[in-house]
Image (cartoon, rainbow, N blue to C red):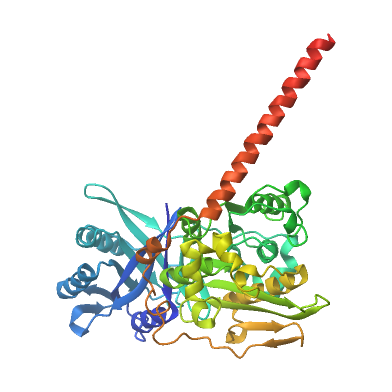
Length: 496
């Protein structure tokens, strides 16, 4: 199992202002986390902290806390079912290791925290340049706690800033292939981009292009989540597929294509033929630092919306809306929008990217009912199938721009949702980037982690049918191959 920690920009600012002192001395505090559990990574999601009052700790070059402060922390954690983080500062920059005193202090705290909360202690250290390091103390035997360093600490909000443990995530040696990319923003930013774990949910025309763009930007860890099989109707819209790919999982076809580029020697691709609403799809998504939402149905959008705020994972979403003229003599209008949702940004629901009632309708299964669909108006989203590769290409480009802006934040500027009007050629940007104050997603789910995650897992009939169809086709092809071999063998015997 791997480990990481994430927090909002607001929480990070409070930590920095308290812990990095003008007098250069060390300081400390406690915070609280909820656990977010993916397939191969556990993440401590920090959304609350309890700063010490004057008498709660002793600052004397180094720093120590009093028992009264720890009692307040454990009481609050126990009452609210939270894990505990012990956080202190070091008076120098960069990634922070641990002194002998640091190790002894956390080793002393680990069993007490485990006994009170049932969860491991998370220890964290911040440097003067706001560089974080973190570790989980895991109980492996009676009175035996093992330290596991976190692969990353992420600060999420208007931008995404990641701090990596080089022993776990060493920097890459990019060659001539990425010379021009790196020259645009420098090696430091390239190292940050390349080490991010990025998931793409939905591998239609947009998702395929996004994956290609991320590979050629130097991203080494990609997770592809989609249960669909390649069909004939996909051939005009999926990048670099052909008729031989029909009947295969989209995730498998794309994985093979990206690996065959041989552009990145240590490229890691996780192909997940499940829905984001299924346990396997959700767990794969929770292993990621950033998610691309390339879906066109309300339920997966709702799921990604909730996962984003509950687990502090930025989600880059987009969609295309096109209409032909009634007599099909031309296109009437086309628009496509890209935006980043997540902590300290707007949610998809407040932005109007889906209606809760449509997500509930899909959850009920009615959208898989042909008789129900027959009664819906022609302009209902379920009856809309228009798409054009050129429009998908433009939307994918806008989503990649959202991603790069989130990481690079050039000149300290960030931007919110953007929408392209094909008829006029204008890009509209006058959209809200904050949720309503009573928003049930951004306010009600923020930092809730596994408490929310578990409620989002459901059976997905279409995904199960897709995997069943694939398995049936696989067995059929296998049998045909066997019978062809048998026939050839019999014919060879008779020819003798």
